[in-house]
Length: 315
Ligand code: CP
Ligand code: NVA
Image (cartoon, rainbow, N blue to C red; front, side, top):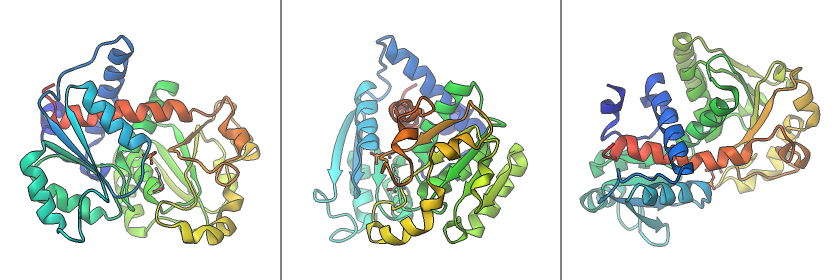
């Protein structure tokens, strides 16, 4: 039932998916990963053409969509912001209708969440959000696959996000955690907390899953964390905020003292990458045995492949 329900769907934010559907993406990714390690690739995207629209740069997401698509027999086509005139010379609605006539699926990375939603509405094909200012939903699948591989389960884990608590990563991690029963804490200065509206929505999901949602400006709230996560202090497009963010966020840097103050020697460190070492995380933690950031980066590919296969593939 879950499998059939996902066919033809867009992947715009985790708000649109149930816990069972999110679990399905993660487990399918694990299955595709295991097969690839044995040299077995599928053909579920054979004959499918996939547009990859990138208004912002990317290493992991671009490569994951490209390789994931080719591994399954599909054809990816990269469309950078200098290649098409999305939103300035041609409206998003018109571009969507043109691409929808030619492509079977569209990935979009850019600024506005409204634009990825418009692409989905007007193209008539599955659209996958490869990051907007508001959300980065495919990243959460990779993070949760990494946690599931490491701990064996997700429900009941204590997850602490330290840093810019109102960016795309914090928003999407809070939604995903609330849905999946992961206890979620943000430690950040109050001025960088997520919107009340999103917190209330997530508290509703959390009630159903049994998760807790905590916002704190105290670093001591890392106590009991199984996972400590951070992201850059200035997201793409916010480079002019560097001085302000360094002043606000320096006390929330993930360093050895913070890792030690969880009271657990099993705490792991995750980061969506790219990282600015010496700012949101020290080199020491990044390079430590507690850091699983490169498993996490690899898992972008397996999870993004799973999203394409589940929503578009003959699988
Ligand atoms: N984590 C992530 O989305 O990386 P890229 O910006 O390299 O795609
Ligand atoms: N918050 C970061 C995430 C990068 C994957 C950004 O938007 O730049």
